[in-house]
Image 1 (cartoon, rainbow, N blue to C red):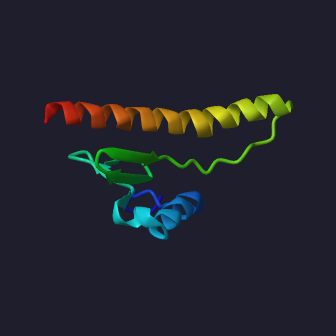
Image 2 (spheres, rainbow, N blue to C red):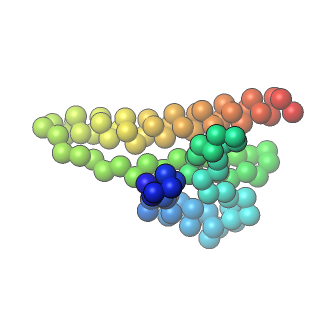
Length: 102
């Protein structure tokens, strides 16, 4: 984090956003959208082309050494994949409840 406490995009996030920008998704792609009024990052890239929404959550986490490879793989799975799934699930719920309020 920088001195202003703003998270900096990691290389994987930059790659995903770059792919979106180089494709037809560039018209609808938003990098690091924030939740109002808190300013909390909702996801890494949000693509909105009604009625469809694509949510990208990128975790740049390396597999760390552990006594057992299975243990290292499970830790990585929890930190990378499950964390992204949770972030996407929460944003999806927020989008659905916002749509129901319309």
